[in-house]
Length: 479
Image (spheres, rainbow, N blue to C red):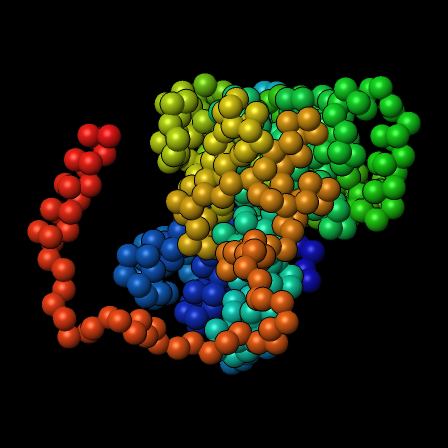
């Protein structure tokens, strides 16, 4: 790898491209005329403009006549020479882009604009040629399917009804949003899913931008110990014992409070520091909640919810992919959803921008009376991995412990109890018993008429029956 990319090397890059148009096409995604020396920049710009307009490389005489730059032919080039060209041109481009990003960052730092700096540097460092050719669909179907389900694939939410709707659960690297009105229980839903996951052995972080770390942890205590917060206050020792017993067979769980208006870089930095200091992996990240975050990639007014949420949701999804974690967050429903019983995209606060980015979006429907009856309803508003859009699931809610479980499920675990089908239930309630001493049920026989009944005799007509009925009624009245 070269340490310096002087004028002669840059000229050689252009000359090699002119010898083989394929090499130019292969580096086109990172080709930037601004990276070349000023004396060569007109030629580099002409090559780009000519190929974009005419779909062919210009001739050397065209370049000379138009820009005054004379490029010479390079004879006897082989594959090895072009392998060198590809690796060196990639390094040259990355170096030039990084140098320009550093200079631009210095100007931003002087103006006090710190947030875009990291993105500029990161984008420059990540410049590379496309070497990953993707997935050969027909090559290994079984291996391809197993890679999806084993590496990125579905992780059970702990609610079997929701798992069935999503064909197995949530996937790593995806953005999942629970939307609800104020006081609908967005945080409770996320805390319950987090508890389900740590009881499955997964480890994760719950980042709260609204509630305190202590209150978030206390609510989780109530769900985990099956005790109300009032009972926990009266008997802290019992609650502590139950929490410690569960901790022995559960994953790690960290609750972190961040101030509102934090951004993705704050979350990324915290997660990195947590992993370095503790040495613990992170399987899932819960962020409570999306509407309180600010974007990094653009300076947006907090009042411009549509644009703000668009950038924030894209950055959250990129973070989920970057870390390979399960990402769950929440969002507010707007005022038009207050009187609705079925939600759609128009009810999401800030508009449809975050819905377009998210992989799964769920509406939380509940009311005070439903909570008192112990009911929660989850409505699927969007799903990329299943056909569950428009479907609803009903969950049970314990108002004392705040635990949300499958309907009819075990509140201690959040999983369904095995249920028999309807016919089994009918059989279980049946009180009909065979006569004592019968070894088996007697065979069925056709009914026979009594001995004095003549099958050939005419049937009684309706008029006769009616006359007799009137006579009987008259006798009853007279008595």
